Length: 353
Image 1: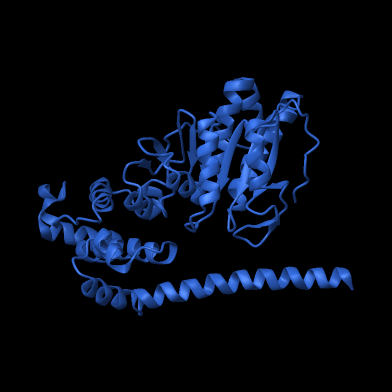
Image 2: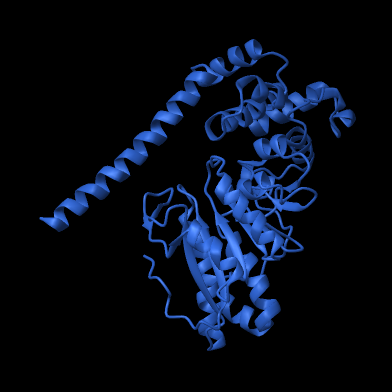
């Protein structure tokens, strides 16, 4: 997939992409496409890039595809003081929360001291946060990571937006967002005409702005158009850790409890209390399978006063305990990685034969 050097000019602006194991191939390739298309449209080697991994070996993406590296972290670290220093460094992660890596975090702090702009794609944001580089800054966090990230790094100004640009800190939630975010850099450096032409080639209808929402509006997501129902659900989503009483939800104050019950049963097929509880349980399930937060912390962050109450309610909804759900997801993920490795070794053996 990747060829070292990319035949780009040494004069090009160098982007360094650090790949974490389990990185999202979609987000990473979206960023590369933005840079490649910029070179093609501008007719010059305006940008080149280098791929870095912890040990210089290929990194495995979340879909199992491996991407070769140009160098290891140790080799890249020394370039900060050389003429080939990076102009921009992005840590590319995926949907899982990566383990802490002191060497990576030290390198990111070194880059910041040397005024190298930094970026975090999806779970790669955690490396920046652990390095102390997002404190007091706006940062885009994928909605799946948002509850966990907000609990861990409360000094950051976490946003559920597609991407954010706060000074020299660039963050995006993943998916197509790196394409949009890098297009803003390209537009500033090569002009709006180049950015628009890239959009035309990539069949991208428009340039998204920093701060735009990452999730579909409730109308599209839930298939509803009742404005009163939408407002009620929005308030529920915003108050999962400290659930509101139904009587306190506006515009619930303007309708009777019976009217609210009828509205939810008709549109959502369940009572408002049941819908609210299901939302909290879905958030808890997401935290269980994507983070290592203690069960009691997850329970509290989703509005359950005790671990026993949470465990009992969770089991009624999902048919197993929270601990069992986490164990099953861990086993599934490990089996997936073993399968990818087995397939790779089998392919290598066939080539040797």
